[in-house]
Amino acid sequence: MPVLHIIGAHAAAGGKAYTTGPERGEGEPFVVGQAFGGDEDIMVDFVDPNFESILVSLRLLWEDEREQEWPLNGTMTLDGKDYAVRCGAD
Image 1 (cartoon, one colour):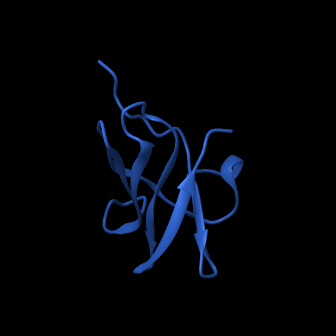
Image 2 (image 1 turned 120 degrees about the horizontal axis):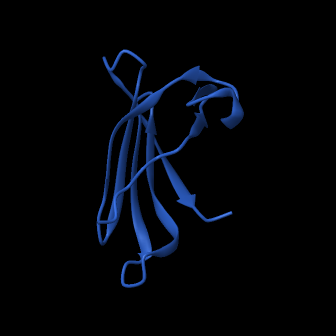
């Protein structure tokens, strides 16, 4: 059964940065609170290390949901502000 597993992340916008570890970049620590992936979208919420509040949310849609291939387009919400994002494979 395929599942969504986030191995690391770095998010920065508006002068604020969060990271799952120094290997991903500088920023305040955050962890994956919940992550869901479906045929049409991916949703991830990153929370503070105490799991007390959501710091960053990602809501992404496959550009071609029939193929579920990169890229994805969507919105990152960081500190209450929405940013348009595009995610691609490296």
